[in-house]
Image (tube, rainbow, N blue to C red; front, side, top):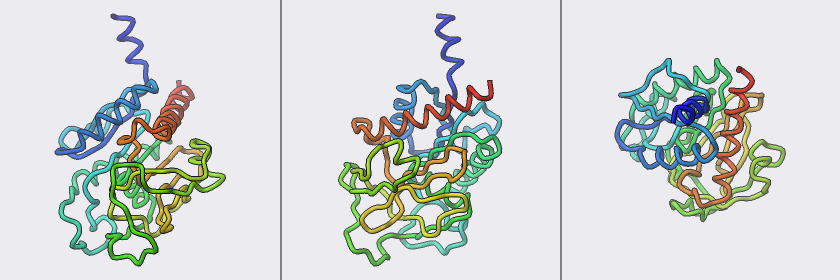
Length: 236
C-alpha cells in the first residue's frame, strides 16, 4: 500500500476548474479520462481553490457564461447567469500557467476564457448572427468540424474533419494574441484554438469529456496528459 501511495503521489497533478454549484458531471468525466492516461486531477471552484496548490497542468471546464464586463460588452438578454468569482479564479490560474509554461486545455467556456485572457473577444449570442446553416445544440456528436492542416490538433486527431457535440451559444469573435485557429464548423465559427508558441494551449468549443466513448476524446486527453508528463519530467 505504501508503495502504491508513493506511486500515486508521483503522478503529475492537473487542476480542473469549475463552478461552486454545478460542474460535477464535467469534473467526474474529465477526472476519469485524465486518470486513464496516468494523471491525477484536483477540482477547484471559487469557494475551495488554493492559488499556491501544486499544479502541473490546467483544465478549465465549461459551464455558465463569462461575465460580459470581463470583455467590455453589454449584457445580452440570453445571458441569464454569470459567476465573476469563477472568472477571476480562472484568469488568475491562467496567469500562473502562463508564467510557469504549464500545459493548458479549455473546454467550451474554458476556450472562450483562454481567448479573452489572450486579448481576444466574443460574440455574445450566436442566435443573433447571420448563419448559412442551423447552429445545433446537442450532446451527441452530430456537428461536423473542419480541422485546420498543420495544427497541433490535426497532429493529435490525424483527421481533416470530426463529428462533435455542440452545447454553446457564444463564440469567439477576434482571436487572442499568440493564438491560432485549429478548427471551424460549417458556419466558419471557431471551434478550436491553440498556441502559436511552444507552450501547450488547446481550446475546444465542444465537450470531449461528454464523449468518452469517442476515439477523438481519448486522443485529446492522451495528448494533454502526455504534454503534462513531458513538462513535469523536464523540470525534474
